[in-house]
Length: 256
View (tube, rainbow, N blue to C red):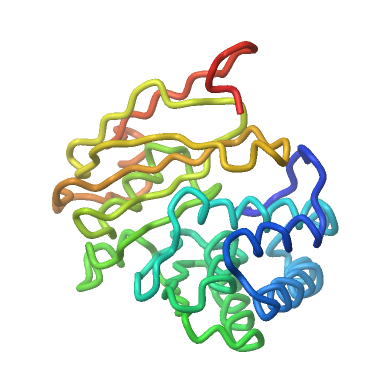
């Protein structure tokens, strides 16, 4: 389950989400949509078994704030196209769409029940900048949508090497991929030549909230090889990317 319960770091509430929305340039309409979404997840999301029953209150607001953090790493510009791979209940793609109405967001979710929930979110909140694609990303990458998005994002979908293989073939050359990392780690090395990966960096945008999880940003410098992405067995058996995650020790300059 993509959005399961995790240990909560820091304090999270509607007010902390509102502060971040204001920082990102969002308005009262964005805050209202986030609150309506929060209620949908607490209600239908839990009832339909899309998220853990513990995804309520502070835990859910934490997921909302972590989703918005992606915009602190790579700001969604007007008329850009973003794709959320394995969107689940809409964290982070739907959440970002509520704050950035002039950026288009494609929510990719192959599981029928989750895709149906995303359609409900889109319709009830009037998210005209959102499309829901109920298809596997491996199939999408072999369609005419391949290498058509400006930015691809993935949060809690798969380990970083597999997430890169799913995301990079969807992004234009010159575009970016954002991957949410586990807490307390940095990237020691990254290699993904066959996927077209170039420069990368890790940011910790929520350090002021006490969150130690970073976001990896990878620039796409050349076209991905046609064989990528592969089906799950191939991705697991022989990863197309190497991402060395190293623990961050006390006293390290990169500690958030």
